[in-house]
Amino acid sequence: MTGINKKNKGFTLIELVVVTAIFLFIIGAAISIFISIFQNQKKVLAEQELLNQISYVEEYMSKALRMAKAASTDSDAACLPKGYIYMLKHCETGVCRGIKFLNQSGASSDDDPICQEFFVDNTDAQHPVLKEVRNNGSPVALTSTNTQIDLTNPVRFAINGTDGSVSGMGCSDPNQCGIMQCGNLADQCLQPRVTVLLNVKIAGDSENPVRTIQTTVSRRTLNVR
Image (cartoon, rainbow, N blue to C red; front, side, top):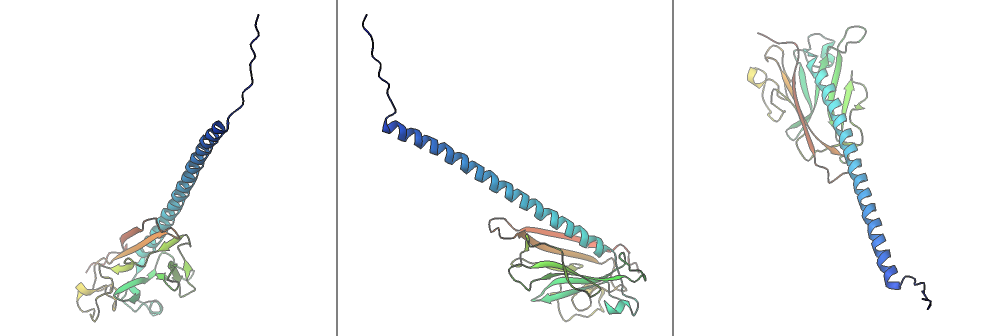
């Protein structure tokens, strides 16, 4: 009986190169997919944080603006001229980026309304933030550093559709109430409405589109002639 000699054969160099190339390709594809999933997840979380912040700020400002009262006493005049309900602030180049009013819902212990102001602080042009001032105190940021307000698009506060770009008008004409010079007079305007327009994006993310947030609120107390 003739024996059959079997020789143990190893891998050739070409086989090793092919197997290594296939292995590296699979590993590279897996890593690429993992990185893509991680980046998308990071973007989704940042987007969610942006929407959460803006929703909070929008709700917070809307609630305060609805509870504005007309300045009627000498103590009120420390915040607004008598008769004013809202006053546009921080106006330049035809756009007002702030608004000031008396908030009657946040009364202090002596029942005085709170003098409240919202404005966009663009001292740092690279990182503008929305801020709040209460009773002429120190400004407090309402948006974090993760949220960037885009000033390349219109950012403004408006009263009854007028953003302060009209100048040289008095308050004798009820149709002109709400312009920059006279704010919004209680004895001349019916149901003043405040519109807030903000353009926001995720800070440091040039690929993420700008989100436009616009809301219009009216004060709760009806002014009926």
